[in-house]
Length: 215
Figure (tube, one colour):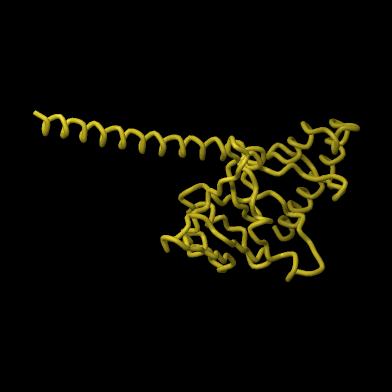
C-alpha cells in the first residue's frame, strides 16, 4: 500500500528516539563517564542515540583503528635505540598515494648500504590510512597509530612527518595494539628460532665434514 515504507521508516526513527531515553535511565549518571557503559554504547548491543561531548569526552579507540603510520625502534639493554626499519623501501613501493620517502645512506668505508634509514618522511595529508605499508613490512618496523588529533595551521611545517616524529618505542606499540604486538613478537621469535636451528644444522654438518676429513 502506498506510504507503508514511509510509516515503517518513521517507526524505526521513533524506536531509536524512545530507546535513547530508556538507555539513559539504564545508565543513569554513568552513560558517558563509565568505561563499561561506553563499551556497550560502541558495541552492536547499543540502543538509541547518544552524543559524545568532544573534546572533553572521547570514544574508545578499537585496537584495529588505524591512522598515521609510525616507525618502531627497540630499546636495548645498554640504553641505545635500534631501528627495526632497514630502509628496504617496500612500504614506499606499495603505498597507493606515494606519500612515503626514504633516504638511504652508504657506509663510507665499504660503500655498502647501511641497513637503517638516514631520513624517513611521510606526508600525512596525502596518507589514505590504508595500512598497506604496515601489512607488507617484512620487519614489523612500521605500524598504524591511533592519534587522529593532528590538525594544524601550517601543513608544510607540521604535516610532513620526519623520522624524529615517526619514531616510537616498541613499548608504545605494545600499549596501543597489545594483540597485534603479541602476534608480531611471536612471528619474530619464530623467525629467530628458525634461523638459530638453521645455523645449528649448518655447524653440525660442518663439524661432521671436518671429522671425516680428519679421519
